[in-house]
Length: 82
Image (cartoon, rainbow, N blue to C red; front, side):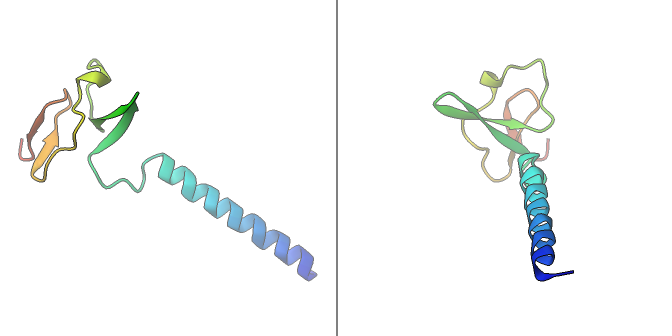
């Protein structure tokens, strides 16, 4: 195998790895928080991963929950123990 072929296979391997990392990031694999910021016009709503699908996005808070709090599936900010 000559150096041109080796370079080609190394390049393809690097591109596949970077594409896999980008896909994992887009799917939220690296998200450590229990909620996601959803852009809604000029602002964002913070929506939990276990949200109630019957509750519209605009019912969720526009501010992140403080430490010791979480967002309920219906959009209320509640203590983390609940």
